[in-house]
Length: 310
Image 1: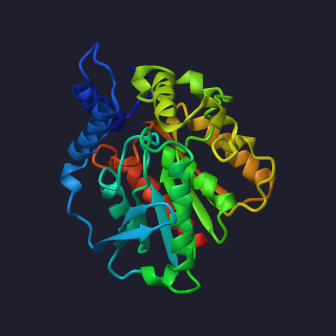
Image 2 (image 1 turned 180 degrees about the vertical axis):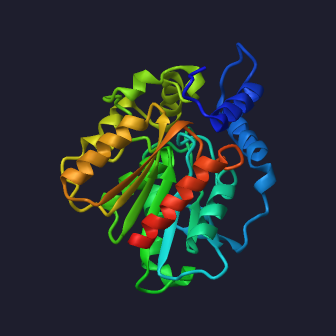
């Protein structure tokens, strides 16, 4: 084990070791989805039902399909901001349910409405379908924001972890009237141009290159998609129209350097950014506050302060 792992990371890795598929078994989509849901259910069990506000389920009808959303409205809500959240899971796994606990907590802490989106997943619906879903839902919410409980002048942000962070980073420059973005260990370097991709390519860091390849194979039609700047944010050459960005990054994560490099690109083009780099932490912590209470608390407080500054 890496001596830099903190106690929260060690507890998480112990849970993973108890829930891994039997050795020699083929990693199917069904197995992976069940694993992700089980890990979140077990890890966040003690925090379920702690949301102090109201939860409303709705369907947004887009031009291509119906997208379920969950609207989290905390008590004493401020109506000057709204955040649209996209869960992680490699464009193949994860759900509103797996990420419900953390969205509950951050909505409570920020006193703002957070909307979690059930965009379609690969391999049934590969890129660009899931990104188009996210874009269509975001545009609809922006155009109809008062119907979701905020003022007509409310600022709209996008947020997400891992694959959801990549989606948020893709939407921020392309969808009009997004006012801020929150990228949590976003997948921004799928071309693997940065050092951390190889530095942390070991099972003890959870997210290996083989696992990334598995997600890419199931979430995209072809590796050529990686050369699209909507997917590989580091390929963008002009970012001066991008809204302010908060980066939350795990120090022991193969996706770390992609986030750090993207922050440099944004700042070079005059975009306001803030970075929280968490030591001793691996990829995947944000959606598991039951295992990472301190890391999540620090992240949530940073989100609260960032949103206050917008």
